[in-house]
Length: 205
Image (cartoon, rainbow, N blue to C red; front, side, top):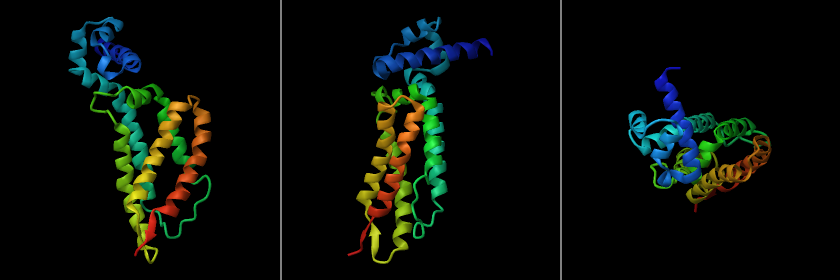
C-alpha cells in the first residue's frame, strides 16, 4: 500500500471513531488529523471537507446496503402475487443478506442512524422508506389487478414500508449480537409479508 493510501485509511479510521463519538456537526477535523498523525491539510487533500470525509466513511457500506435491498426488490418484481402463498422462511435469504451488510458495518450504520444530523445523510431512513414505497406500490398494483373489486390502499403500502425499515432500525439499536439479530428478524419479516398481503388492498367502492 502506498503512503497516500495508508494516510487516507488512517484518516478514515480516526474519522469513524470521531463521528461515532461526537456526530457530524461536533466532529473536529483537527482532532481527526492529529489522531491519524497528520495535518489538517491532509484531510482537505484527500476529502475536500468534512462532508466529503463523512461520505467516505459511510458511502461504501451504504452502497452495499442499497445494492442488497434493490437486488431483493428486483427479484420480487416478477412475483405473481395472485398465486403467492406466504410461507415462513420465504424471506430468510433476504434477512441473512441484510443482516450481513448491516452488522459487518455496524459502526457506520450507527453513525448513519444517530450521528448524521447536519449532514446530507440526515434522515436517511426516510429515503429507504421512499425506495420501498416506489417498488411496493407497483407490486400492490399488480396484486390489485389480479383481484376483482380491489384497489391499492396507498396508506397501508406506505405504512408497511415504514414498518419494514423501522424493524431493521430497531434491531440495530437494540441488538448488538449478529446471530441473535438474524434469529429475531426472520419471524418479523414473515409477519410483515403476511400483513402486507392482507392489508395493501381495499374494496374498490
